Amino acid sequence: MRSKIVAGNWKMNNDNKQTKALVKGIRKSIKKLPLNNTRVIVAPTFVNLSTAMKRAKKSTIEVVAQNMHQSKNGAFTGEISAEMLKSIGVKTVILGHSERRSLFGETDAILAEKVNAALENELEIIFCFGEQLADRKSENHFDVVKSQLENGLFHLEAISWNNIVLAYEPVWAIGTGETASPEQAQEMHAFIRKLLQEKYTTAVADTTSILYGGSVKPSNAEEIFSKKDVDGGLIGGASLKVEDFAAIIKAI
Image (cartoon, rainbow, N blue to C red):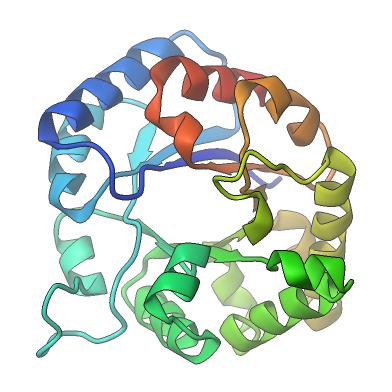
């Protein structure tokens, strides 16, 4: 049985004080929710990881990292390694977010190296991918998604997929107010699951959680999450507000 997941990517937001308040608010808001098989995840900035982990201690909230470097150590000013994350108790890292790809030049080859480094350090990966608006308009979106998955993840053995969560994020729907329709999300998620079945096994396809990321908010979360192959969401702006994030968690 695959997990339902609601993950809040806080990006470059929240200072230390705001981080404490947000974790405290989320913790209080979901305390009485029947989460069952649902995982609640937040991804603060590097400097606030420890703070968030302390505030989330003995709760159902998981604190994860937004990114990491592929090397163990070295002259990489400003970067953080998998070993460093693991040393403070982080167990999961987001890789391949569209902003990392477009703004910081992370290629499929770089992401494959990061995937390997994370798995070598026993970190779970939330792997992001998705098409640009031009790809969608040219009806090339399926090919783009297939290529990103093949280049970034399909070198792995089937056993590694026990530590992989996928996050499909149509880039044209991130922070734009635009959202893929529930039908569009389901169509792509079903396509992704079919790719996993063809490359690996039905078991891998059926047990891998696939999240949708792209302007999910309280008003559309329930309809999106109701689709068969959508296992939750990677939430951006709405995860910065306790009431909105709690409503999205409740929707799943």
